[in-house]
Image (cartoon, rainbow, N blue to C red; front, side):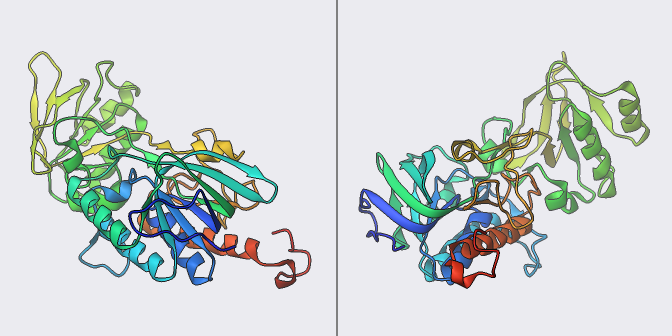
Length: 355
């Protein structure tokens, strides 16, 4: 199926037809785009610039980058790489999706700012998009695809305070596997009230002994007293109060100010917020894709969903690893599965014609 090409800055035709529509332009979606485009499939990446890959975090556990690489740089390089093999980009948000026979129909509407990321990263991404011929969806753009890869990611309920967006990935974190190493011998605050928050604080002891935990809400902690005793035994001070402010400058949080009667100020260098991200699963629901109890997309080991022709990768899935390296792997797996699905029956092993 051939796609309808558009020129940079102009509107696309009323209908775009492609072999695969990839929803989400983070590491998972771009990995899928690179690999499907290399298999000579027509690929359209639909992205709304509202994902984790535009924040300020530096990935230091990605093989091959001993000095680390910013997530936003991975995104830029991934977009260039996918475009080299013919993938195209549509800036917009999918607002409706259904299936008609063997084809999937998506309705994409334009977005006007207000997404995720730092101003600098968004500006660089916009500039690259223009150079790659990225098109804005406008009021509405129809897309018809033979396969769909959902790489829609999650929404993070970060605490909102003046300067918060510059702090994300610089001094405000959510993942020990990604950033725990950088806490070595530094003062760290954990904000959260439940067992996961307690475990996070205790796990950080592998890196530093300078840890405090604040419940982050007026109701205090929701764990047994025995767990608070465990914290105390390991020298972790626990404060059962909300955080009223996060003093910061140039993306660096300097303290937690607590909402007790004395407005206690605790100096910190890094903060880990413990929260449950919300999977962006609206399109999956529209297509009848199975979700787990947390709303994450259920996938198999090759990123298949329960709907033939629909695959999912990255943080929105039930695997839910939240690692860039895992997202890239899952995007590659989804691409290989989608490519096999697109083969003619004669190209498949006997008995596998419907896969």
